[in-house]
Length: 240
Image 1 (cartoon, rainbow, N blue to C red):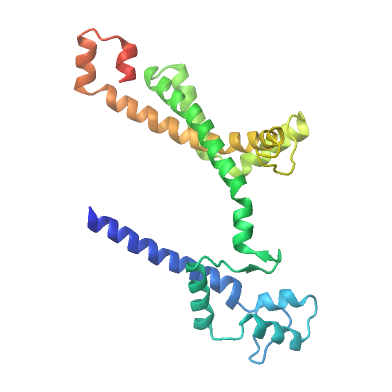
Image 2 (cartoon, one colour):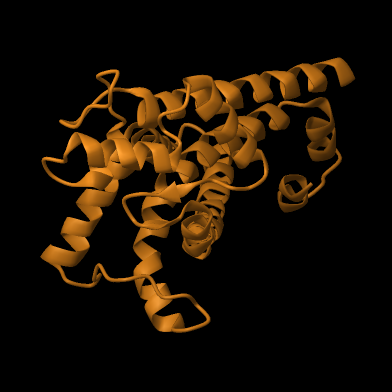
């Protein structure tokens, strides 16, 4: 078990390095733009910061100031070292620190994940239990159809459909700015309930299938048949 955990940790470390390398190559190494440095290759970041039709001198100055004219391995080493220390860099598009941007959006992300998890647990577990107890019934077929549809539909597509229907068609949802629950609970709930529902559909479908499968497997166990043979109430059997 310990060897398995160590292997997984090492593999996770390798994957993090590979992902970091790919991200670095995409944003810092690929050639692009109209401005060119002396070697004929200008950093897309420098070109973007220089504006439209930049002069080569301006692009070169930006590259030197940001260290983009240094060797690739030096840039990547600095990138990884800063990331390990918690310095995620600077957003040249938003003109803010990346770490600040991430922490600024964490409350909304946490609200979405926490609220949606409650919704999909409240939906998926009861439906899975009822579906297992009513096996091969119309209710079971309906719940499996719901699970199949939930797993099959892309979340982004379902989100667009729900926004169009609830906002444009019937007008009970208004797409607006997120407000923290500590500032405006009503606005927070008004902007979060639909994302909760959309995200919960997919995960509730997974939980429905998982709970149903586990319930059907447990119902065939010997101790369940023994409990029923001894006259234990069905509610107690299901509870345990």
